[in-house]
Image (tube, rainbow, N blue to C red):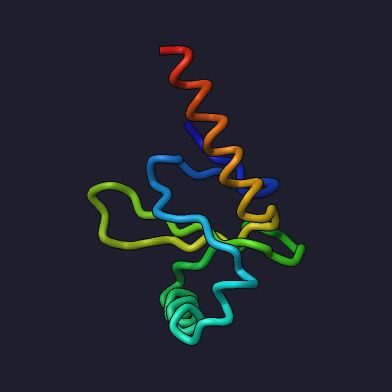
Length: 94
């Protein structure tokens, strides 16, 4: 299944490592440092498109070494709810 992050961005839910609240986690020096390095490495994708991002989603495809950081406008609770709901729909269909 896929998780909708923004107007033109979806990611596979199996690729998601974590969904984080940008306001809370960016208070940490280590998180800010990680996000700065990811941005310099070209691993940050702005899925919020002109809106203020409220969360970031860390993804990595199985078998690949590089990670992607998606900045998303929906809050983390909304994204987590969407991911759980999609999994329940998939489980019922099987």
